[in-house]
Length: 186
Image (cartoon, rainbow, N blue to C red; front, side, top):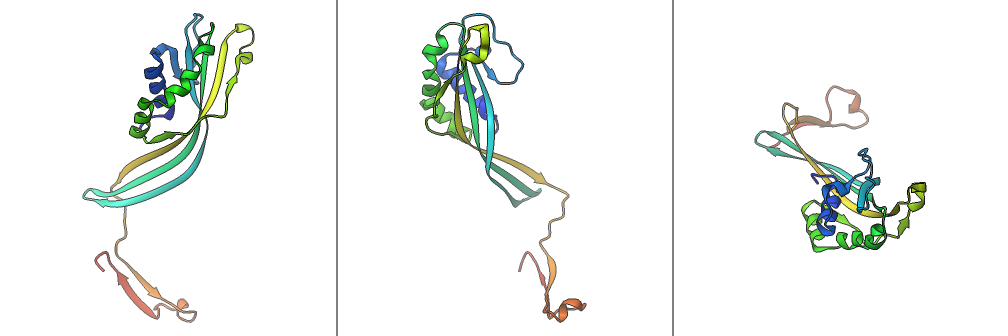
């Protein structure tokens, strides 16, 4: 995955809901919601649970290629807000957008999967106090594959090495029972 899951979800919601760039953003960007009656959406990761971390190497003409893979489940919170009834009337569009054909294509293209239906939409309007905002929050679990490739040059890689077989008597001696050389060609 070359982008944040939040950004891909923003791209999906923007395309499917007809939002402009100033109506949707990643959480913690120090943005303040304007005092108009437009619909706004904020997207941010709540937590991330790693499932698998692997490392593979393979030879390339320039040296050794290291591939690092991390698979996580990330819970992405989506908040929909408005000063009028737009958030109330359009909150279902969040879920519809995430199940759209465009969403499916973006998931396949970016190596991540949005799991099934969330448990609930939470009416978090009370958190806004006297500002009279309509605010609804939903947490969407996502399965994400991260991959990083790195060319290793100038590092020692041992294809050939000497080894020996010992028993309890020969282990303390300079020579083993059997000594041999393992090579890349062997």
